[in-house]
Image 1 (cartoon, rainbow, N blue to C red):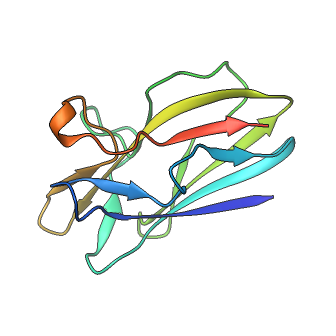
Image 2 (image 1 turned 90 degrees about the horizontal axis):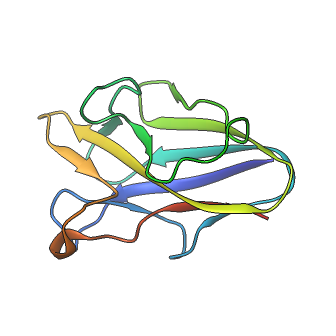
Length: 127
């Protein structure tokens, strides 16, 4: 099953991304699933490369057990990120961070450590 989530610039916080997750962890049903995040909105964004040493396109904040999630991949022009989930049972939630940039190189992120710039920490939960 494919679970598709939109990601766009959060106008309430400078340089922040908002994951359209209804302010709750992305719910993953039991079995093999595919998670997909699509960058949308008025500004052309791309995820950073997944191996970027400073701002990887996807980064775990809470590391899940090995084997639950496949390594993420970037699709097309870098505006879509995908990851397989092998959900054998309930677990999580696990927080993650997404990093993207616009054509001018301005960085946007879903997770900030400072309270003044905190957005909802995106999470994944296996049911």
